[in-house]
Image 1 (cartoon, rainbow, N blue to C red):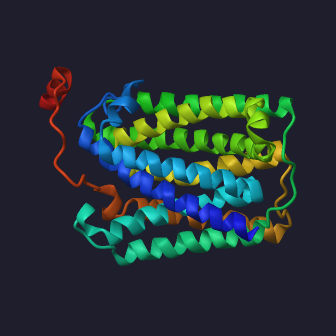
Image 2 (image 1 turned 180 degrees about the vertical axis):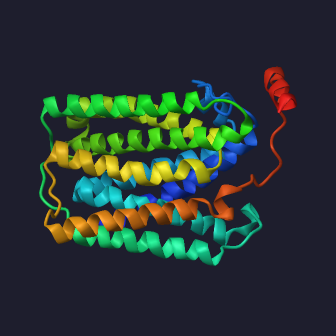
Length: 315
């Protein structure tokens, strides 16, 4: 169990580093269809030309590897809530490297850090995740996949419904962040299924449906992440990543893998209060000046697309 916690924290560090680098790459790219409320299937490839984004992508892959290892030694209900502290590492990077922003952390920022740390600690203590199985029945997987796709589709549709002036960009980013958090929560559930086959070697891995489901779900989650990053500041999108990912994964852990959480009245009360404290802390920290106004290290790259130049002139 302690190994799972350590691996989860390593995954947090890598994904947080990836988030900062990818956001820097997205802001260097210039205006995109994501900011205009559209959906650009080629956005990932355009971002791949940004060195900061590529570094962030490499960090995300490392985080993914640590997450696979963590889920090999611990249940979803333990691993995914720990990943909520990713935002603390994002904040840490921006606080320790003022060259990214040129500002300093405020007292409110540090209070939010304490609130998030306390929230996740109390939740894990109260919930005491345990039990579970390594694989889930096919019928439950179809149910989980249908529910996840429907929830993501609704969030994406709502992100498009707020298309309009530039002031609505944070709202679009927020909805896309929610969709992304749900998608990554589902991806974590698939990773849990795949992790049970890792010890069987390549033959066991590639003969399983889970590796191909992971490719599809992971590609979709990556596309959503790219659009959320490009649509607005981390202040808008990060809370969706931070909260919906562990909540979705925890629910799927109970549904698919029969993982058990403490359900006594005292435990449930503590769990709900700790999640509330975690959510409040995440929201407060995401509105830190260090995160909400993150600027690229260098000036934005010149925009060569005439359509993008026209959009910029109109703004």
